Amino acid sequence: MQVDPGTLTVPAPVPTSESAPFWRSCAEERFILQHCDSCGRWIFYPRALCPFCWSSELTWLDASGTGVVRSFSVIHKPGHPAWTAAAPYTVAVITLTEGPTMLTTLIDIAPDAVSIGMPVEIAFTPVGEFTLPFFRPQSAQKSKQEVPR
Ligand SMILES: [Zn+2]
Image (cartoon, protein in one colour):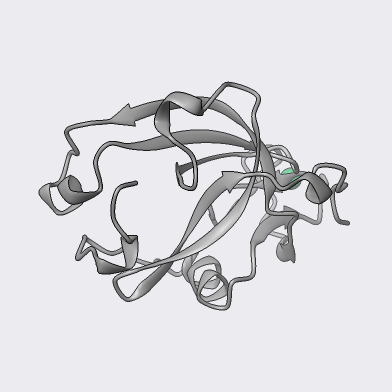
């Protein structure tokens, strides 16, 4: 990303009753995910029912904030003009260490240096009035971290 994302004026996320805890946590630079008390699986995106067993017994728990790049795309012409100053930048689908996948923006790496399977970690980034859960290449000491329970 060629600019400080904090200088961008872009459309903000619209928290729902299900996602509000996630966005509040991001503002505190704390990465949380929903965990199903019934079947034990981790869930993202935020929702009211477990997509695996339909239980409503979901609990927000601290998550590792680590994962690997599953897929990515370099954005040269953003879908919204407010992101134009940031192009080219990389959006990626991350397979989180806990299992779910998450669409995010990669920072601190040139688009042509990104690769599938690359370990990444959370990089909370102020953008407008929100703190967004971007990711960056994982630092060496984090690469051995295990899934928290
Ligand atoms: Zn479940």
